[in-house]
Length: 69
Image 1 (cartoon, rainbow, N blue to C red):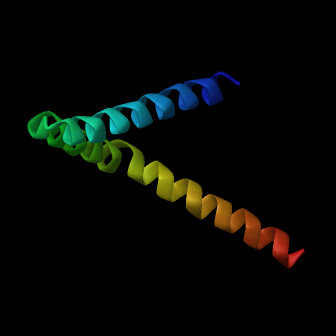
Image 2 (spheres, helix red, strand yellow; image 1 turned 30 degrees about the vertical axis):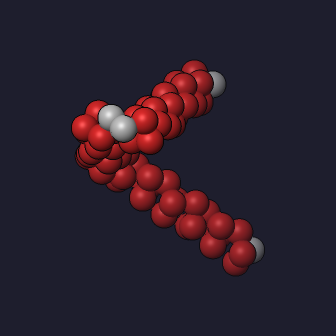
Image 3 (cartoon, rainbow, N blue to C red; image 1 turned 180 degrees about the horizontal axis):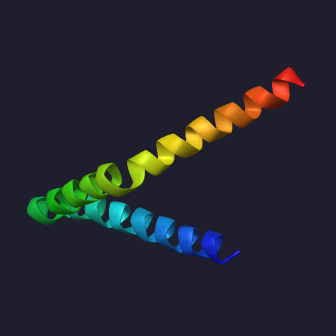
C-alpha cells in the first residue's frame, strides 16, 4: 500500500512541475520553463523510462497469457 501512495505522490509532483514549466513558458519566463522541461525530460529518460518499458512488457505478457487460456 505504501508503494502506491509513494508512487502517486511523486506522479502528482511530476505533473505539477510539468504544469508549472508550461505556465512559466506562457508567462514569458522562457529560461525557467525550458530548464524545467529539460530536467523533467532528463529525469524521465534516466530514471523512469526503463521501469515504464518493463511495466508495459509485463502487462502485455500478462494479457497475452489470459487470451491463451
